[in-house]
Image (cartoon, rainbow, N blue to C red; front, side, top):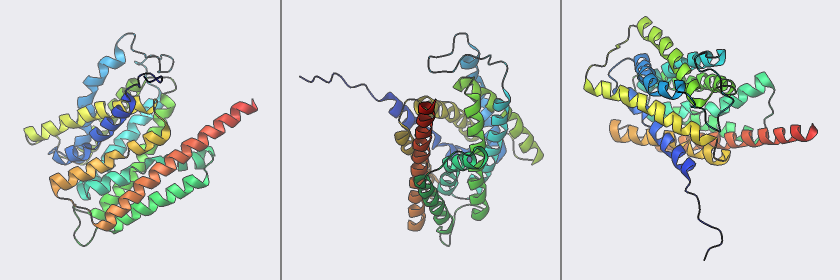
Length: 312
């Protein structure tokens, strides 16, 4: 008879894995929306708003792991900025998905953890260690290998520009991440997602009108893809946000990177976008570097917090 007792089912790990796999479908839906890139982002956010609103404005919705309740009807400046940055993130990434391969667009956009720490070092003087620098170097080298190792025949209308836009996505998402981190000090996850999505939808509406994009999907398949984007936005991002606070950083940083692997596999199965061996090696290097850098940054921050607590 075991004295250890029954083991708890790892729901946070399951939720994180399911959320990452769900987000992996996003670039596929973007390709199938039959609308412009910014318009696809607009429908993703606009259709998600009714799904999030009941969780934001219902009474007694705060949970025990949420910060002190704040009035969700009065968004903070950080929330509004998060929406602007998220709109830029979606616009750049969606255009990148149309110009380069799904695998390249997704892996390059996932350099965000490295960018976040670099911004923290430059603007907030947060310390970085040698392991983070090694991970950052590996991640950037892998990203460069992916971009340069595509071979003579590359999928997409303009692969070099698509790679640049996808890499720039990491900058915008880093700004979004930092804004969300500040907003989460006072508001719950769903409130932050709702207001940033609302502001993002307004910004993307302006972009799609200014660029003269196709706004309405051409047929039922396009509308289905837009609905898929909205569902992935709510369920995928929600599951990841819920699980991240309940898992060790080392585990979470690796599992989240299932997303680009799923996207690359779907891109190959649906659009026939096979990677060259050199691209595959670069993708593995980029993702391994991101995971290593994210783990090292979290470890260094934890040690700094412990040192600060002991000095008080």
